[in-house]
Length: 327
Picture 1: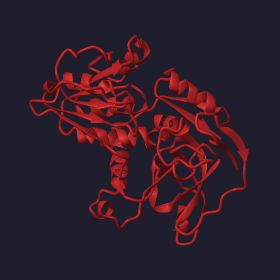
Picture 2: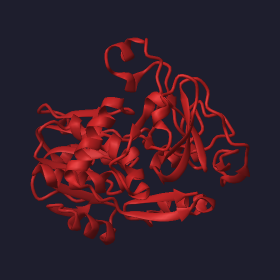
Picture 3: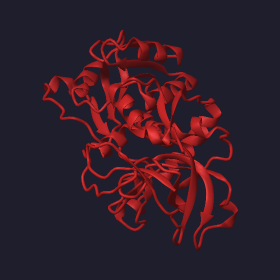
Picture 4: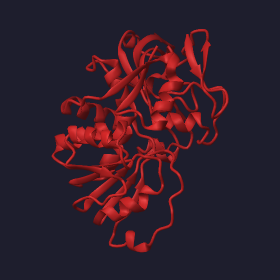
């Protein structure tokens, strides 16, 4: 197999040739067709997440075909297209798992972070944590759904019945959510980096009611705001943009420090919450919605060997939609 490997945090990935991995009990081997790049991959590569061990193969938005199954895995999975996301395994017995909150498991494993991921030609997965993608004919188009879509959906669900939705950071997750919100009849207000007219035009093309800079106030108070950019300074801006009783949802796994702000921004029952990881139930629910809504992802394709270039383009904001690696 071929893999792009992180050996030192903050340094470019190294291309390696390895023996094809063998699945253990309850596992399967996926021949990767496509792996999208998530902002969390930047946090992994840059060493910004705790308890990282090296070497590590990043990548957790994986689509591919089941090539080999280990003991205890149904043989009818062979040859089928499946998706693999961030949540790679949970313990099943901690208080969170027992209360249907496996996203908060005390002993989780995460694809591309605590176990090798999809920046490779092959990846091993726990068979219980893959999603069937028989109805998704294009692996490149499906790859961003495996995290940008999944965590975006969990963040949107946290917003409840909010009608006016602000999306801060119009990247891979927001370009999927804008389509879902439009399909649901909600109004989308897209906030981008100052001067990023291309992202604002992209948002409008996907049905956004308004698009502008994150430093601007929306033309009407928001019912909820979802923050996907890892910028803590967006939190007080988003709180100032939501109406009384509004909710601000932080959707990322990592964010720069949130600056202090006056209590008046939180008063009148505004809420500030985060979402963490996802559950498998989230995944199945979201994929059903994605099919019904006819989600069309915008992707820029790179060969696997150009993973470092793709990461650089994502970091610099040179992409609309998602970057996708193909072996």
